[in-house]
Length: 161
Length: 136
Image (cartoon, rainbow over all chains, first blue to last red; front, side, top):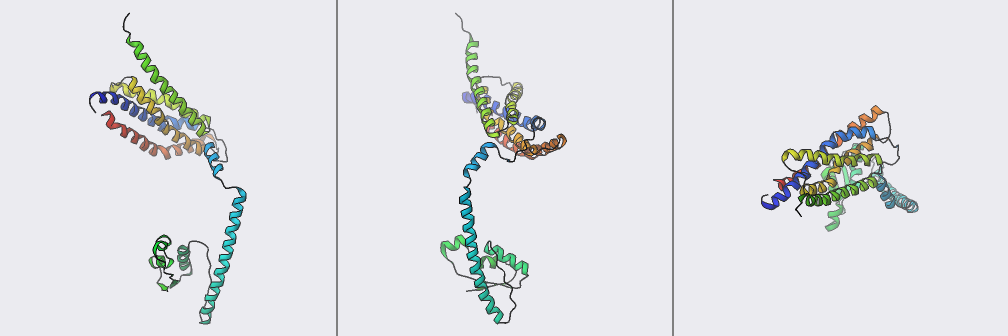
């Protein structure tokens, strides 16, 4: 910059830059040395600074709400687990009748991930999945397990419609 | 009756000087409240005048004196220059919080300092670079 504004801003910017440079030099040289001598262990339980702790406490869910949510999740899990067991034993019966040996595995988690993990764990030769044929927005958001399996399964995949 | 320029200079410098000092006080209050450790806060506070003094030493050979404009620059810098020290002190405090003997604390402080030295250098360099075109 030149002219009057240059004459005005040059010293200002120079002062800021010099001060920043000085603070950097201080922060990486003297400050750590002094800090290691001056700072004492506080043996505090919390690692956060007081203000953060206060904010976290405010954001915490009350204990009763927490226990209600936990109980509700457990209830839903039990219902789902029971339904899954029933469905699975029905499918197992068909396979057993056809002369296959059947191991039943039920997992709770992300469908595709658990499916692929189980495939690896059991050293399966083939993965058979059902496709429900979701379309539109739902498909975009949720995707389909069958599609994911087709893309990522280490073994051949048979998709049943 | 004669014209005394020193009164004018005194007045101008005094005003900006007060602004710098007041800015410093605000910074200290914020550090104390947020850091919650008076030793750490005191250490960070000490870096303000030392940094500014060091800046003065750097500016002198460049032919930039202490005037209203450089004081204004320093007032801006007061808020920015504590960042480096705060990050450093906070990280060291975090590491030495759980005790150990002097040697152990020193080692951990060293590790903490090395950990944040590069990020601090980058952050400060960016602020300096931003002001570079203004000073050219």
